[in-house]
Image (cartoon, rainbow over all chains, first blue to last red; front, side, top):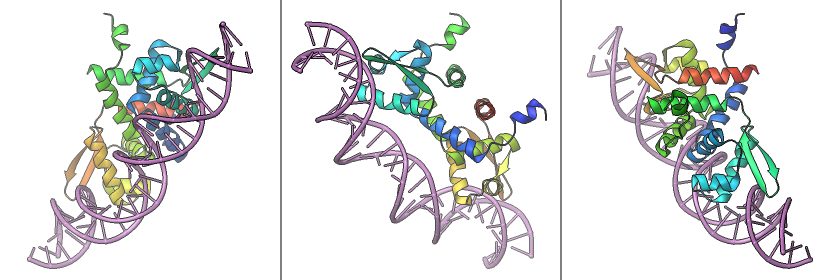
Length: 104
Length: 104
DNA sequence: TAAATATATTGACATTTATACATATGTGAA
DNA sequence: TTCACATATGTATAAATGTCAATATATTTA
């Protein structure tokens, strides 16, 4: 089977569940903004993101944890601070899609 | 400003609202499956999609209308049947992202 | 150990959303 | 107009989610 045919194979129900879960997680303005800011600024602390978004710290922390739980983000602790960063390889592509849309 | 810099401009709150609304709409297994099937098969009737997904007709009709309302799908009536089809230009790109993920 | 700072967790409430079912609307053929 | 079929809409209940305040945990410094 050629590569093009492979790419157009029908998605399994399992994959649909997984992918829709991803989209659902991005289907919230603040969560999408957090991902976008991490794409622009690289690893950032919870308070840094709270200031950039103007949201309360517990709210930001909660969403960052949920994004991490789904495999979209990672985190590392440095002293008192926790830096979050993108880990899922497709996120920059999705964000570029969104940026393209905003230019049209 | 270079094209690369344009592409990395920070998204407006308006755009974040709009884009997260799109992702939210795709954040449901059946809605994502409907979009995927329309990408694979081209324009398809409501009953056709109900059979392909195994879901009840009212459920499929409801979701198709919501996808259309957000500008992701279009429809045309031919006699008794209504054909739905993709209209948003970024959907095939997003679906290819998902298909790529399922191969890794 | 105590205090200060950064982050994570919990609980309560309102709102939204999913789901299933019944039914209404619209179309073409008899 | 009446019937049969395709689609759309409405309703009710259950489940999931957002939001925010209070509080707990963890780390560093005094």
